[in-house]
Amino acid sequence: MNGKEKDAPTRRDFLKLAATGAPAAAVAASTGAATASEAEAPGEGLRETAQVLAYYESARF
Image 1: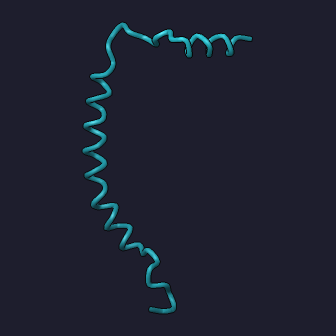
Image 2 (image 1 turned 90 degrees about the vertical axis):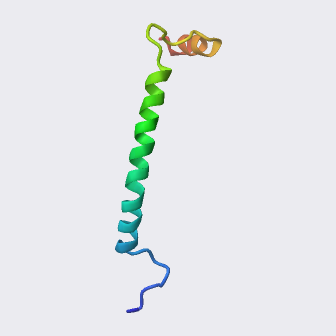
Image 3 (image 1 turned 60 degrees about the horizontal axis):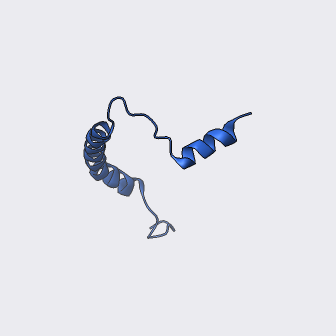
């Protein structure tokens, strides 16, 4: 094999993985976008919890 390692990934292996991974990534992106838009409720903002108020205090100059 011209002195190359047998386990080294090749360009052909990369293209095979890219071809099979692209549709899976598209499906994941389309289903993730739907759930993200459903999670946002209009009119609600950031809830002022104790952690958020502590951050506001620490961020003041």
